[in-house]
Image 1 (cartoon, one colour):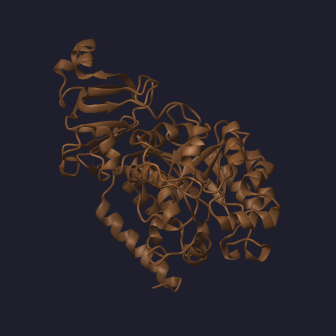
Image 2 (image 1 turned 135 degrees about the horizontal axis):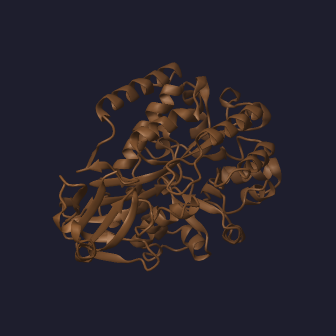
Length: 471
């Protein structure tokens, strides 16, 4: 790998223990790891060879003047395959259960190529938004599709990837929500879960690929699968557990009727609380449940745009943070967001908390711009149990992004360019470095030819919709 020297950033946001924001910031990367962080003058003084470095030498120099540099953004919840079905049900407006019932028959038409191409589209869009680490939740595998298909896409795009092997086993005939045709045998789910862990999971520091297990939701899997997935995951180091929880009032009712418990209580009853567990959404916890999540160090991934577009509600993130819950951000599935923009998601999180919710008045200071950025960086790293990403300091992985703040959208906002990233129109990443490799440069993705990819993606999407009798 080429040694990288980034210099002259207007501001370099470290997210270190002191939350330093360095004017005229610089960092030195070697062997995929951050070696030094400071002002440009500091690093030039400490490493005299950098004074003579140029792009033609062994050191790649990046002049970041006019930008704010951040640790790479961490997206902790996604369904990448859903890029194939954007706008289905979202334009007119559907709540979660109705939306899922509409989409299940379309998703049943996927195959391995569809999973691969859609993942590559979604990951490309995320990379251009500043995401360097992505956790994905793939929970249905029709027509021979496997988790391997999206792993191949992630490796080609170049993102740090946390795919989770999901599954659905509780079909309509057994009292669940999904149709039986998109469900799978639990023995097969567990066998394949073990296969993907043993084939792909890398628990070592700076790992580019860690696998998790993710039975889909309380309304689509059995208690046996929840318990057995947890037992399997805990046989391996740093294999995390993930599922949807407490997303809607409909889910509250389902859990009370099916299990006689609210969602968080149900999760605890099947061994699903702890620092190796993170839940997507958690829109409707009560105050006792918030405290229980904090006490058990269980993670939460906030998905504000999806929660708004499906009218699920507003998660009490301020209350969670004040009680010590570990909170991350996710864009959720492309079909319940219709976009993949992590910086935009940080902005939505900030705005939505300020609006307020029943029992909490609107309050402009409920979540600051910097807190939103912290959720998108350190918050995600903590939830994924990673101490090698999320901040820019010596010894951390060389994952960082730069956004231009000398452009039209940020004109007049340079009194606080860090806040401007979230308060102004969300920008496209100007630079993205992942594991020491330049993935986005001058606002362009360098690892993927997007034109043919988008064309093939749209062909697959149209074919799925046609076969499902939609449109």
